[in-house]
Length: 146
Image: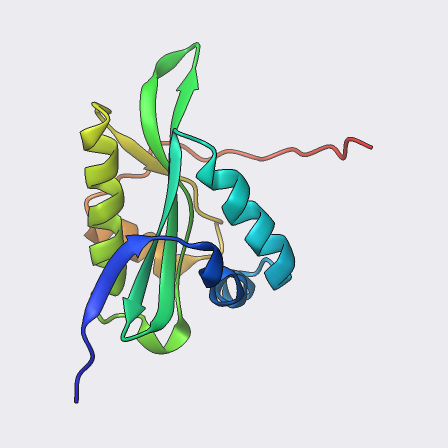
């Protein structure tokens, strides 16, 4: 029997599933740390995370927010996006992207951007299929503060 796909905002009870999916994305995190991240995001009005569920199982998530910089118009930005390995190429990613885009539209944002590691060829193909265009290539620099 085929189970129905549902999309909703993330809940604290999704922490373990979200952490496991984050590992698939290449970012290891404990369920406890993920729970704290979900809690903090809940207090941030310009961000949200949607999860895709098949039955009772969280099989994907997308983190979307509004970014404002002095040099450019505000935009939606996908901060993270992952679909579980066994559920890729089933349309779940497209559904989550559509939900994130609608979230941005509902806030009056005229565009949405996503940053994607250069080595993620399958993700690049996915975004192009969904109408995203490569606009620039950048280097990201980080510095520990502590």
